[in-house]
Image 1 (tube, rainbow, N blue to C red):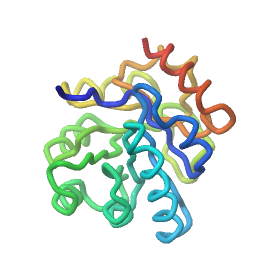
Image 2 (cartoon, rainbow, N blue to C red):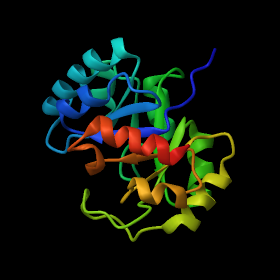
Image 3 (cartoon, helix red, strand yellow):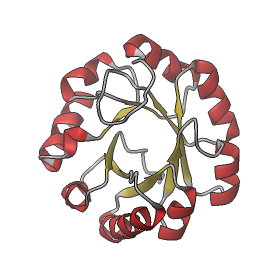
Image 4 (cartoon, rainbow, N blue to C red):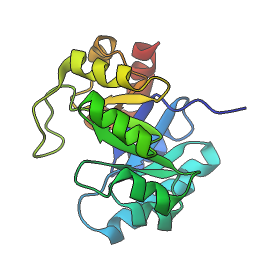
Length: 194
């Protein structure tokens, strides 16, 4: 039986958040560390140790080598990272490879190159990452999702539970929404996605 792709991706650099969501239904953890590979590796290894027994998927943001070395389930790459086809070649056919896309054309190209899922955004204005382009809004996010039927598309950027019903996507990825109360936020997002 094939496991459904998680609808909520919790992006974090904190083990407390990882512990708070490990084992919850429909959740994946994405480790995003902006400092250096050594710290990213340390956190990713700890996350895998927590999440693997709980059955929770662990992805690493941007850092293919860290994902491979830590034994994570895969990686999510952005426009300035390694190309999807290179990541797929390095990690192999069984790994999860996510790619950030802003247009239907980019979405189709990423899936053709081997992406397992896509992150579309920023959907709304957000302060969790510097240097982002202007928000896409719900209509453009929906256009990305419609371009790749059968591929999970997650909206990212400014995602809150009350905005989820505006988004015609498989799921969502969020950062700050999980910081204070990971389990409560997960329940709120799952209800909004129902």
